[in-house]
View 1 (cartoon, rainbow, N blue to C red):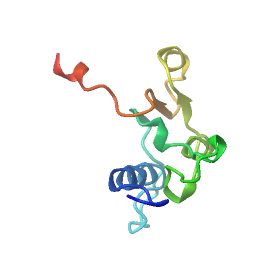
View 2 (cartoon, rainbow, N blue to C red; view 1 turned 90 degrees about the horizontal axis):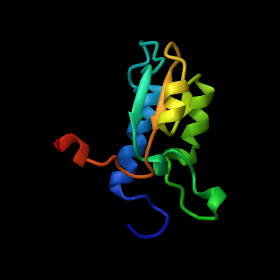
View 3 (spheres, one colour; view 1 turned 45 degrees about the vertical axis):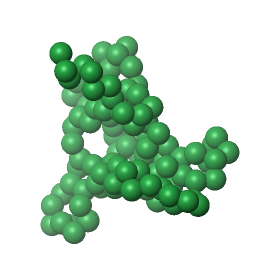
View 4 (cartoon, rainbow, N blue to C red; view 1 turned 30 degrees about the horizontal axis):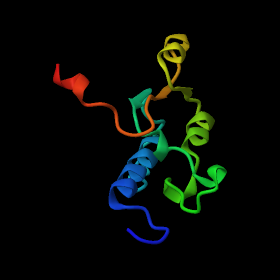
Length: 108
């Protein structure tokens, strides 16, 4: 898309990330505390580009989701060393690639 609008894939991805953190707002009768473990790729969808001097943000509502998840009590890990050191009793967000996870691992 042109201008400062995200493409549809980014928009859907960002909405999914926000719903993992905040739940679905139409269902306010539940006490959403989020999943205990979230692992995947797509680091570019978790932080804003403002610090890199890029005008358009990747994230939903221009939020830094690393900070948002950290503020909700999640441990943040980005590699195997950090993952092995993370307490198993705590919530953990593991984002291991900048973009999509490699699919060839699933094909073996």
